[in-house]
Length: 140
Image 1 (cartoon, rainbow, N blue to C red):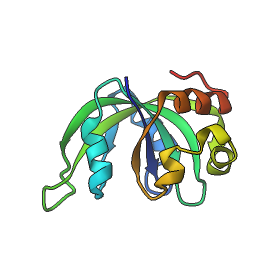
Image 2 (cartoon, helix red, strand yellow; image 1 turned 180 degrees about the horizontal axis):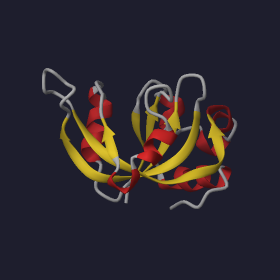
Image 3 (cartoon, rainbow, N blue to C red; image 1 turned 45 degrees about the vertical axis):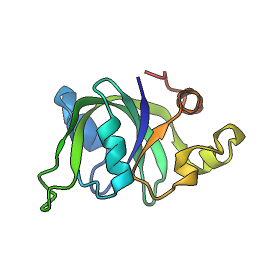
Image 4 (spheres, helix red, strand yellow; image 1 turned 90 degrees about the vertical axis):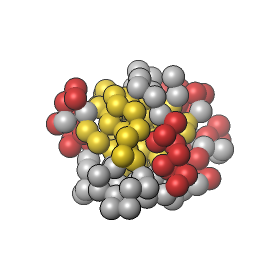
C-alpha cells in the first residue's frame, strides 16, 4: 500500500462533502499539474491518503482510500489530465495543522513542506504513522 496527501479547498470540496459521497466515493478531479497528475497515475485501489483542507485551514482532517484508479478527467477540455475516485475512511480525531507538521523535526523532509504548492503528493510510511499519531487517529 502507498500513502498520499490530497489537498482540497474546503469551499470547493470539503471533508463533509467527501463523507456525504459515501462508500461509492467521489472523483478527485481538476488536477492540472503534471507532477500531481503523475502521482494520481501511481495510485492503486486500496492506497490511503490524507484529506488536507488547504487555503485558510491548512490542516489534515481525514483519511481517504482510492476506490478507482486513474481515468480521463472529463473536466479537462484538452484531455491531458485524469483523476481517481476516493472514499472517506475516517476523520482525524484531532486535525493536524501545517504548523504542527512544520514543528515536528521528523517531518522536515515531507513533500507538504518541500513542495508546498503541489496538490497531490506521496507520503512516506513513517510520516504516515507519525501524522496519524499526532492526529490521535488509527493509521487505517
